[in-house]
Image 1 (cartoon, rainbow, N blue to C red):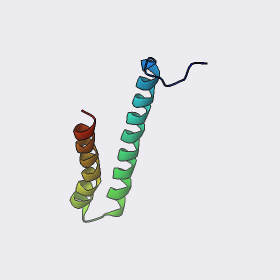
Image 2 (cartoon, rainbow, N blue to C red):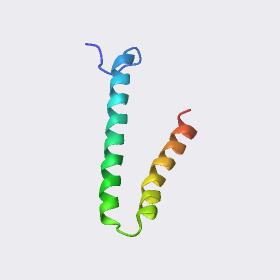
Image 3 (spheres, rainbow, N blue to C red):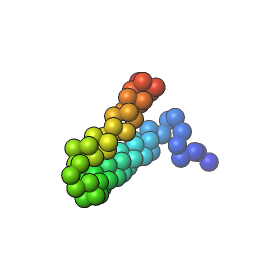
Image 4 (cartoon, helix red, strand yellow):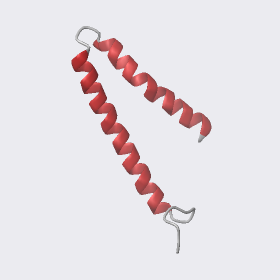
Amino acid sequence: MPYLFNRDNHLNWVCVQVILIGMSGAVGTLLQIRLMDVAKDAQILTAALNHMPLMLLMLWVHFWVL
């Protein structure tokens, strides 16, 4: 029985990556909306704190994966 995620089955990996990228974009957008509603006068600080983990994640991915 072949494995669902093996090295030769690239289409499954592409599908998983597309789903994960879409989910991360949706979570980021929903989190941004919630934080902007909660932070009445500190929206710039809230936006910076929301974007900082995403930038650190991208830095980590570029450093370790690429």
